Length: 248
Image 1 (tube, rainbow, N blue to C red):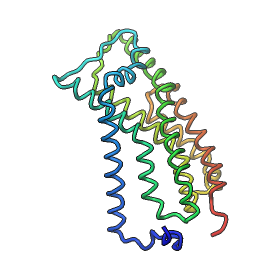
Image 2 (tube, rainbow, N blue to C red):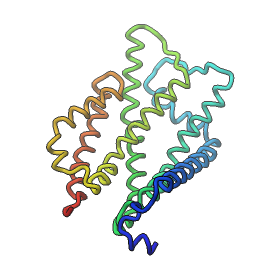
Image 3 (cartoon, rainbow, N blue to C red):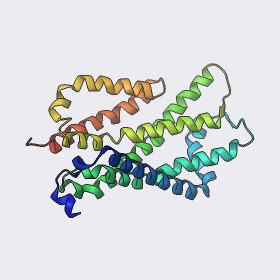
């Protein structure tokens, strides 16, 4: 600890192999945390599955959720337990990420470890909650209306549904992490508030383009992602202004 405080940027003395070793430790510990969270969630896998499929059941009036293999029910329980394990272990994973990047920071910046882990976890889980509460109801309603428009009763495969849900919640969770990413980029002098302002119109176009790619093909779903992305952009603007180093 004394050496870390004496050397303002100790990471410059680390070799490439040492960086790889640290990265391996970070990934290994995060995977162990996810594994423990998955094992813990297995006991409630049926309840977790019911919770994950609730938005679908609310939006679809007539449908059948089907499995296409003899082991699909067992695999489904493992998948929903894994999703739950990732969410439960996210604070621990963010802590491991902090331990990996902290050697590159100055001594005074190392003190924000607890706020970093707390804020990162809150933002990640908030993105997932927003996706579950706001995105899924509108998206699934739109999908069901499309089935009705061609007169087909939907039979939905379990693995395809879980794949769609997993992709969407991870997208929203990671998108909500942009303020944290902006903080570190601004501290490194890579991104400034002036750059964000200068490229405002391009970033807004990019936001709606990303929303159009990542969401179902309806305007409501796209707006539901574009709106929080715009708010996050404004947050990043403020964060960059406050955290950008005033002296070179």
